[in-house]
Length: 243
Image (cartoon, rainbow, N blue to C red):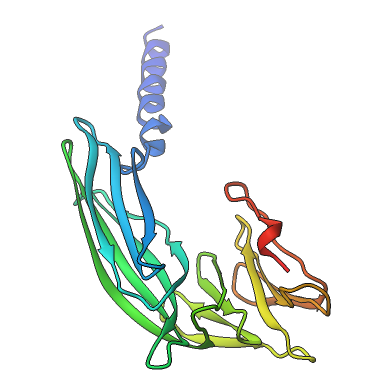
């Protein structure tokens, strides 16, 4: 009987140590959010960090980024958390489609946003990390398309008949497109598994459309005629914005 009681006690201790509750703790910034707004004719980006910490609630920090020629697209990267320093970092990608002396150059501005979270406050710091000139044509009326997965960002404008695949870890660029007759980029969409479609065609309707598919690894999966798009679960695809 004594051996049976000992075995039962050991089982209970092991079950407690392996309980998964600590492995599924909420991210330390899960009660915080960042809201963005455009101003100055899309030449400035404002941000405000609000929500709550363990012992407080409200807005903790904010600022303005810019000026830009014209903000054409925005993305926020995935969070990286350091539990030892209670910090959360993520990248903010701001695509400027009307910069340079002629006002038609395209540059991707990469900002690093760091949240240092305590029980009572969130200290927010945003700094410019990288500016990446892109071999695309922009302008004050240019419409941009941009989507990303874990490893790559895909970028294009309706003024250029090719798009760019930008590798996140080293900013290496690859151009792709080249349909005949020439077709400009009209949409870039992604799904939650990291698949990407880059769609080419005429925003005014009519004519020929084509699509290139990419996988999560950034490699091409095929191409063909027609306009095709990816869907994901949190952001609706708006047909009014598509060719």
